[in-house]
Picture 1 (cartoon, rainbow over the protein chains, first blue to last red):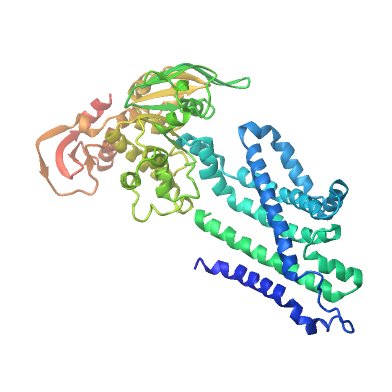
Picture 2 (cartoon, chains in turn orange, purple):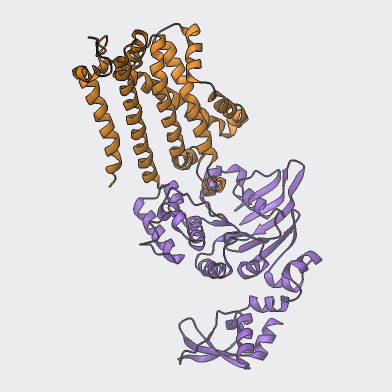
Length: 245
Length: 315
């Protein structure tokens, strides 16, 4: 019963890995879209390498982004940080209106080309949905629940870890899910400024007018996004079951 | 014993509680009654330091509460509120066990305590313990709220309109149980309500509050007989205060007791010795009789009560 919700993400991940490994052998298939060329499969790097580098970039930036955003969200909802709450929640909602490409473009002059500016852009842009959801999740808890938690004799830390975070967890997870999904796409654009990602075949295909390359990159990016999204859905369900909310 | 000495609480320029003095003896039920905004909840929340006081002193067993660690203080004060504040992500059992857990009781002792309390409050330890708060009716949730307040075996109980949001019948039941539990446990209780009938029913002494001040602090009978001001008189209602007075005493206090209790045929509407004189009078009027047999909880005939005795008892 509980294992069933993990079947979908596992299937997506399996399909993703299979394709990353087998795409080079599927050259005949791509001759349909790009007849008359010999370069039917992107070969400058292996798809495996690009997939790993892509995932690594997103994973590290999402981890840093989540830690920073959740800590900031917790800080501004404590008595000590409450003065910063209006400012931070404003930044969180305004920041969302800036497109990720703009963040990427702005990072280049500061840090030059390569992985670093992509990394910075991913962390910064990934912060916002998590921060917004952390604030919404913590702010959405019934105040009488917090009052009674305190009245029972819980310390501030106990209220946070036993009551607030479990209750807000699902909303925070949804924020991380949005952030990671967006960043999988944003990381691909990172290829334009020199990061090694699944965007490489797409960019190469666009530059050389090779639709097969574009397709190969796009299919893998799409699958990665779908696999990640369904993984998060399963995690959110498991969280809901664990705390029955 | 809880003592409030010259306690004041201001919110900005507004004075919520204005220089009140109140002593609550060990084991007594002190009911703070008044209309909303009179400062009764504020007073309660200052006792467990959910609100700091602006000035004055609050002593528990002679110790100023500001000298104690606030968490340790609250662990020894059961707290139940109108909206229950149950933790929605925990089962009933875990909700009730929260204070024992915070006190680091061994798991077995905690579990025994939880099922003992579920039984005490008329809930089923087998089926209700594993439910989540959203699966409970309003009355059940309030019972769980009260059980949770009692769980750590605190010396003091603070209750802020715990039965406020319930229908009349459920409220009546819970008040009865509250009285029954109080007879067993004898906790020093501060109970806040806006319902004067609830106050008269549960209180050892009532503190009537208005605009942050205590207008009168006395036993229910004294409040009914000698209201200190027009405000108190209004609050208790002039029309039926005689009946309310009858409501304070039980049939057992005034009846003529048989030498030996005897087993007898159960009647449809029996008068028990724990019923109030008010109930006895109502049954008498309804049955148009001058004398009623009185039964014990066990169903034995233990005495009889006449209309004369009733009216003298109320006078």
